[in-house]
Image (cartoon, rainbow, N blue to C red; front, side, top):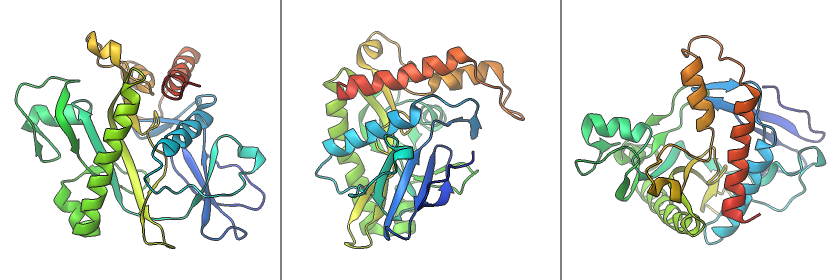
Length: 283
């Protein structure tokens, strides 16, 4: 998972997918480079998904443009040629330790928790829901951003108040729900369902304004479904790396090093990423 060397830039951090760089020539700015790495079950897998970094970056940039009333971390600046198309030049934010998760449908870990408690992250839900059902209204279910290598932890809203204070926690919840509602409408008009997503925010040190950062509404941060497929009862076919997860569940006991992904799984996953970009942006 070695990050590439970029002249004039210092590698600061690598996540499972993204690499962050700073530069003395650009104080208060960072370079966010999306790689082709793919992860599942807390492991970075081999091989990567060709073109994934560019697809994620293009989708994020498109969504930031649609959400033009929400302050975001994009800044004016030149992206190095070596990472053109898969990097964003951004403001450095003081990030909050919270993943702002919004769920419009009951699926994934939310479905598992609902079966135990008829609630998700402390939010009570009606009885009788099944996996993939649309919720009566979207719910905000934040998570604590764990250090690299650890699992993020679902937390109640009250815990976010303890972490960042009530005024900020309230703004994060309100912004997340408002962005989700707008994005859901945009996606729906294109025959795509936004089932759930996560946002990350920070404070702009120059203005003190709470600002949308990281990636936004991509296949890695969100669960998108084909609306027609969902209507017909198919509630598992998503525009993301679910193909990878399903293959691993069938071929790996989650102990030791994960197996190398077959070429067919890599290509099918790449096709789903491309299809979402084309469906949503029309390009």
